[in-house]
Length: 478
Ligand SMILES: Cc1cc2nc3c(=O)[nH]c(=O)nc-3n(C[C@H](O)[C@H](O)[C@H](O)COP(=O)(O)OP(=O)(O)OC[C@H]3O[C@@H](n4cnc5c(N)ncnc54)[C@H](O)[C@@H]3O)c2cc1C
Image (cartoon, rainbow, N blue to C red; front, side):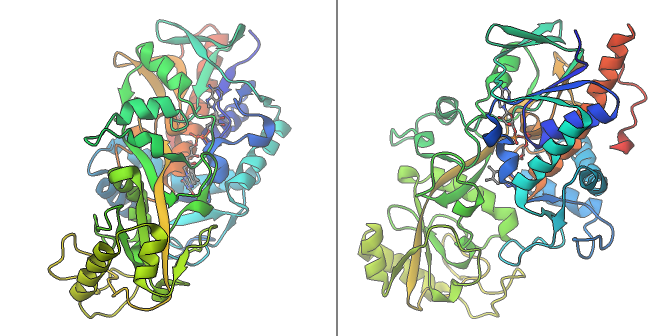
């Protein structure tokens, strides 16, 4: 055996783990399922990471203290989070940026728009693609071996200990291993099975689009769960955004997202509203709309806006349907005109005068309407009108492997001595449900770095014949 640490995956969590393990002196081999040109998993589509900070810091304004970050997580997950692991994520997000810069990642101030994240999120210059490219360059420079087109299909275990990974007939041994192979969001059969059939006899998952990579098939997640690894999370929980129905099946990325929902109304195929479009700020709510649309007939929704909304949200890549009147818009969308006119009429009549301000939870709301629109409610009355047809876009799934603060995979409640996991494969420990923008990269960065350090230690212990121990680990350092 000549490799200390084997890292399986090729996105942010894998790269963070590989770099940290290498910096700790381990020899590292990374196995990425994708070809080189598609490397980087979902991480290549990202734009930012959520960061705790106690005062203004380079691209971040004001402060975003630990407690506020924690309360935000608690709120969006409805308490389905592990506080210890969540706080490790939060604290890790405050110290990681200098390390990221040392590997070539650059940051920029956010663009303005509906996300309101100048205070909480640090944006990557050039987006996630530039981030993964910088990490790959740095990894190569440091001597991390990287193999592409290397989909691992099984793991050899000995009583919870990692022994080897298999790619077909090839067997690759290592002293320790980090799993960072994403969720199962690209596996349409598994999604179909998880979501099942609804009362109308539909298979909702058949209408999902996958926002990111096609390579996150959950092969190793399934393998480990079948092998008795402890699991966390519900297979139906995921980060799901309502995206333009014209988006491609895979890799549509962020430009297919439609951020105008909180500025207008959403109706289903029956031309009826189904949820409060103004419940909270968009970064705290955008990831619930995929699930809401998935629960509608035909898994389709229609975002309807008037000209007052234009210029107030990031323009999606596909232009919306434009019409001079609401009946014309109904015809263009194939919706029942009478019902749509009634829905919009009732909505308009219920809007109470207020002072519109999209940057705060303003007092423009409906009265006596079910469901209500609790902020930014203004009548849809100013031509031209616009509409976007939306489908559920799955970003990543939350079913994962249960971990402890050392990122070790557990079997029957016991941590493995040399098998670790990071990123989407364990994000469900922190995110039982819900989402707040940028926390996916905070989780992957914090636990990728921890997993890399732990794997290097375990490898060192194995090579010196000692027993790998979790004691005395300097978590504060990562
Ligand atoms: C469109 C889009 C935008 C997003 N924007 C943001 C954002 O701005 N901020 C944020 O925090 N989060 C964002 N996310 C979520 C974010 O991408 C994830 O939380 C994060 O990237 C997960 O990192 P990861 O390394 O766990 O997974 P990934 O980056 O998906 O990496 C998984 C890797 O594993 C490889 N792999 C899979 N199976 C195998 C196998 N069997 N063998 C070998 N390799 C395998 C894949 O090829 C891939 O390289 C976004 C996601 C999408 C899809």
